[in-house]
Image (tube, rainbow, N blue to C red; front, side, top):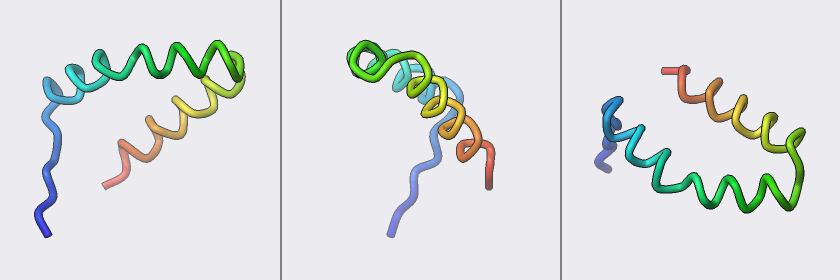
Length: 48
């Protein structure tokens, strides 16, 4: 299995590409859910 580790630049490009998806679900589920979700992503992104 190959694992590709994103560079900081790759991560930023990906974040910008998926922002419309985050915005859509933020509108559906609200700021509380969105903030919880983003905090979890940040937490697990820092684990190595």
